[in-house]
Length: 284
Image (cartoon, rainbow, N blue to C red):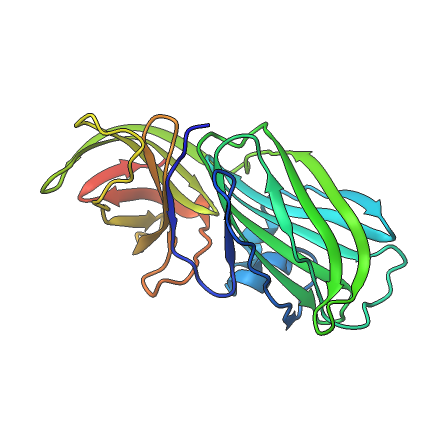
């Protein structure tokens, strides 16, 4: 398998796993937050966009192992990126006695992928909520995604509460409001010539894909263009890339951070156009 490059801006207590090379799993502590229903994304991203979250896919696939129900709660899938919420709770609905963590929580993906995971306990201690932030080299729509966990462990004592393995699979479905736009924009920096080919717009951000025009392959571009979003009320704001990764044909920037570097969920139905280094792309 050919190695693929990826670079992510990591905010908060996240860890990244690459399926292409060995890496250490960093255990992240469970913290207490309030959450109900589709507020799960807001638990991790801290944005007020509850209405746009409710418009995303509710996958609701579940499986019970060792008295623990593992459930895929919600997904935001657009192009080659995804946010996936998976929860763990007792089959009888009672609360855990303390904060719970999962030492090994992984994405089983046969294609090249990079991902980060964060896990938090609900305020009532009944659910451990986990969020996968995924970048891949191929479109996810229609692909099978498998999430794996080894065990549930009490955070303070490392006592095993439930043994796995826990495993759940589901078919990825691109969000209905996600848009894929073909384009042909050439960018030139001091030592690079880049051609932009495809743009994906979803609540998860704006993915901009391109190729090197100077023969380079399997390399991340050194240059990163500026990207601005224009809404239907003619509000303009800038997005910054949270990750840069190689794809099967070239590379991709995933623009999903605001000007302060915080993760930003888009109201993708309200986007009229985007501007990349002065090139305007209308969004139909």
